Length: 365
Figure 1: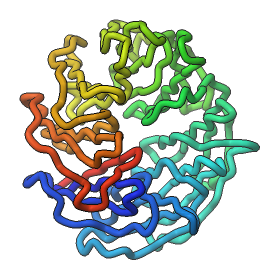
Figure 2 (figure 1 turned 180 degrees about the vertical axis):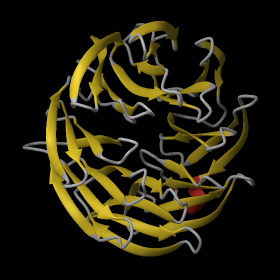
Figure 3 (figure 1 turned 45 degrees about the vertical axis):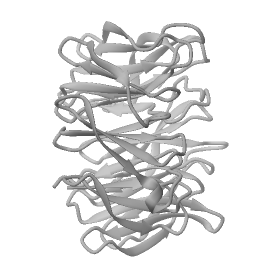
Figure 4 (figure 1 turned 180 degrees about the horizontal axis):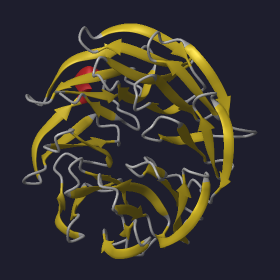
């Protein structure tokens, strides 16, 4: 199994051998690497890049680590996803507010979808049947729905998303069965937030779930039964995680996650097997582990070497958690999910240093 990290202004991607927990190769992306994704068949690595010469989707063959394509995309691409059927690649560009569609067979540009005036595409999701793409336009506080057969916009849904200057973020998550999309309504900093429940049948909000103050990250268990939402909270107040039953659409638990001063637990990710939710702190070296059966914190401790906890990624077998240090120190903390103990520190400085916002993806084998 291999892991690939987008190393920001290092202008490269580190290739990690998961069995050995070490870097085995460095891929030159020519410009700042902002996000990574892997084709469903594990044959190709897709990297979004941004630089003075433009923004690109860079494609590497995983077997040979060779760069095989470089496709122009919209300016400042933040997210890249692959359709579940593996046929198309979608790149959300922040500055221009566009989604670029690339054919995954021959890596040709298929379409460029403009979201609207003054748009900023900041997050993206796709239905399991690959029919619809949902894009967060943070500037206009909307969810834009793209029908993938014709690559046209078929709906624009008003929500209440406002950037409060914290990264990373995850504003949208798809229910695994594809029936609903859940979108965070951040509101203003210090104000009670909510979750919009959007039906993928008619692309409309069907309900709204109140959570805590300033929600900023959302994830869902693989069975689709439970949502976890991290709440930034107001300065000086207790941070929290809202736990939501998707069947009743009710908050069934609120988990305390930080004293409020000096700690902002934001990045929350559920393990692929659904047993745990990991919550990383972006301002202190702390990681919380929540048991998804009891919704209780079962581990909470400082992580040696972690200056500013960022994106959390799990290996597909749920054996390891990789936590990226977004402070610029260029390191990844590796945690054994069985024991919740740190087992390795991977120093990315040997392959370019500063990791920027960070992103990581794994092959399935």
